[in-house]
Image 1 (tube, one colour):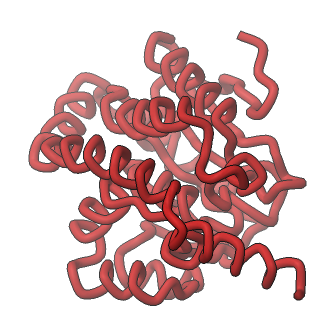
Image 2 (cartoon, one colour; image 1 turned 135 degrees about the horizontal axis):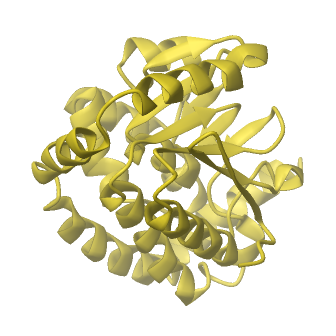
Length: 253
């Protein structure tokens, strides 16, 4: 497959999936999600791949969520519903560990991507947070339910109800990331973790990942319901109001 929005490469048994839209802070479009899915599928089917790394291009952003330019006509393209859910499902079902190398902003849908990954390693410059209620959107699927499993109910509610941003150190302290390193050392640290994983039994890791997922697989029901709900919400006056309010503030008006 020829990729437009991502870079996909396999090096030393590690598949690197890099969101390559730095000019947009690596925000994803429907096409970006589609490409991420196919890259994950390629990594799953490649017997030489033992670990998958998800990263953003450049040093400013891991992923800033959905590209608002695509949603300005009252919600994202309807195909995004499909690919959004497929990517979440694929990150969890792929029988290999998926590591998020968080090199900068992980906001909104980008924050959810790293939360779903098996392991998150963050640069000390990374920033984390949710933005849905601020921009006329929400994720009541894995973005809320699984987040609560990771950081606890109280913290998850704080993250969504206040839409604050958190430093990498704060994310580490709440259990949102596994390790924080200087930005200049991020890729080298991720490679070290990958090498340690590669030394271990892939079959054992495959079954362990399935076991970890088993307790939360029911959340796919919430994911499906939430996607349908947010699709309806995007068509409301309330959603348009908050989206326009955010866009005006972004333009400095």
